[in-house]
Length: 305
Length: 289
Image (cartoon, each protein chain N blue to C red):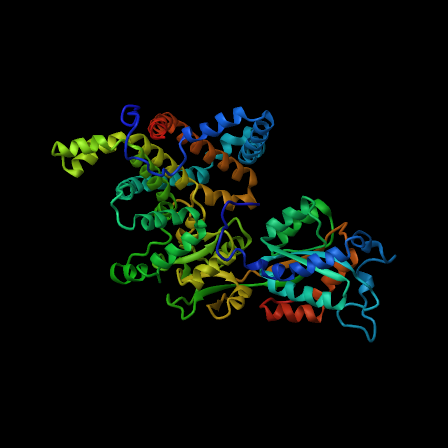
């Protein structure tokens, strides 16, 4: 796991990763130690405030959870159905994102790509767009009267909204950028000399990608897939706008939570906790691989400096 | 209730009136901040009996009565236009009074009032949600309007929908309210009375979401309130449900017990029941008792 990228001073790979490497945070800390302790204290307090903003709402959620009735609430067929649909659609979404996202990341990571900055901006747009807007956009493209949807309807009699396929499409729209940017960062962080060596030995680009580059960035791909899966699991806005809201077909857990909020709040809380547990479990399960991948990049980068 | 992303593109719609009046609310609130808490006890006799019309005065509320402060009215989303208009009427009658309106799902409004949100008047789109308020706080609601379900279809009726039975056709795309929300519950009663087992493709979380599906021509038919069809202003067409299977929805209004402004609250409910209010309700597609 640590071998591919842990080769010290690599010449070229100075890519701007999607997320700052852990090593980048250590330099300010060293400076801070030389400063008066009051500065460190302020930084520490601000860091705690930041953490509290993220954690306290979840603490409130867990405090409001009816733990005694949890099993009954979660075993409700409606909840089980929503959870099954969420897991299946998020799994399909992750598969689709891997199939199209890794090649997209590979293209983006090439320095000789003309207009690469534009492509990267386009990939980033869904990250900053409200998901509801994404849902409206999907509807205008694939809805019954949409740009493509009207032709699908006329030629093949196929309508996409109100199907599980629409749920997957909505999830792909919001989750794909997470995978692409993570994998691109890993590709740029990886040592390219191995690929160059393989090429000089006569390997085709496809062979190099399959046998040299992809194994080296596997931790990055796994991290991207985990982020992609959890983001898909939590998708609400694009789904409710584009796909509809029907049990078993399009009502994923977030939609069920929103619907239950008015009528059965304790069930909404129970489902929220269930979703939280699954998401955290996925991220924790990936943590070993993830952390195993990033220090390699960090070491490479520090070697550059 | 807060969700990370907005539930629906039209979700912000009911707040237009609130947004429009927000600067006024702030201004008046600032001017009358100190007087606010005492207005409820400004006159010794407070209550609906004070709203007896006086000859020569306005038909809406007696001009002798000075109502001031910020009256808070919570109303079901389907009343957005009517209540916004009537709030402006009452404000015009009483220059010292500001009416702050808030619209949303009846169940959410009831929850707010029961958990102690400062409100003077609440008007819900179902007696059941009003019962949750009166069970907790007491009070005596009056029905100010009734609403009826209609089959709604996109303009031009592309699905060729004519009767409730068409909602059972799997080949048509049908959008209904989820059974958990009032429009879904009433819709289920209507369909049961008509002996129709619907084949919906989506069960939306509120009636406005159903309306949007129809406005965008993504669904062939849905069940919405007659007032929604009128509010859609031509974007959807309404088909009446036979009277023998219709289940009218009552809209009860309540002066919240221990309201901060009981006299202004009573004046607002009286306005709803009076000629001006009845006309506004009928224009919006409601029936008035």
